Length: 168
Image (cartoon, rainbow, N blue to C red; front, top):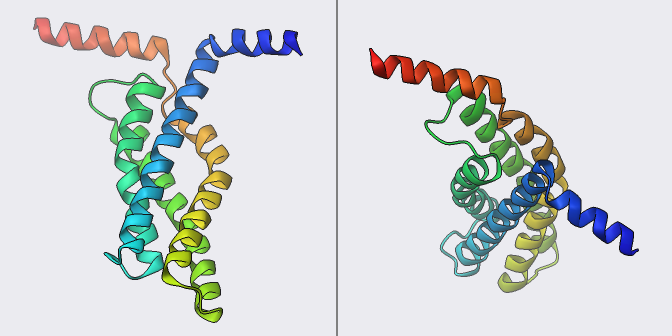
């Protein structure tokens, strides 16, 4: 057991380990943001429709998720690359929201047929969103790692090209 703990600690200090820890931390942060947004939007009846509250709550969480993933988890700076970063990220974000809409639709059907109170419905809606994104998380990890993968030679070439352009 002790050896496993030491191996885990050693791995957490590697580049891949730190990146996974950061990605997981960003996921936790964005999940908390979406959960709070859904509970506030639906719970306080700012948005009365369960699916709309789910979509808006997840959209709100997507903006800090993109910035934190890009800058902190993958160490990217400067302008975002439209085709390699922005489009794939937002495609995955919309796919994740679509996946959470399925959970919201199940909650909507269940709560309407069983006459569940609004407050319990809000909690079930947040729980369905949490489960949906938990399932979707592994896929995002794999895809985002490909999107934001830093190729050191490519980064070096981009830096040299920018320096040459600045000198002329």
